[in-house]
Length: 82
Picture (cartoon, rainbow, N blue to C red):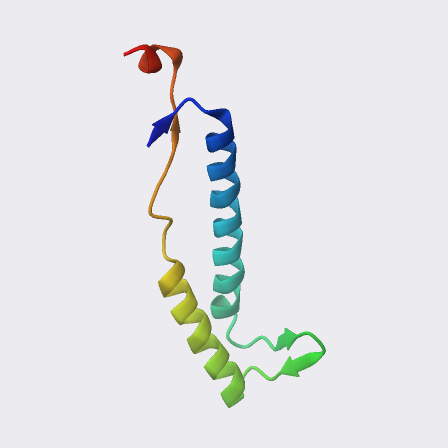
């Protein structure tokens, strides 16, 4: 989508940054399978069944989040005049 509206551009930029940070955080859990997981005040040992289940859940979450299904390109004034 192309737009000249700065509010739409800013909103989509914020949404893209939010999505990227969430995906990066989830990937961090999968990229470090030997690390202990700390959830609040609870520590989960890396080789426990609970940790394995959490990693499966994270994999499913990443699969569902995927890539954002849209992008926004700022228009130039010449494009808006067309």
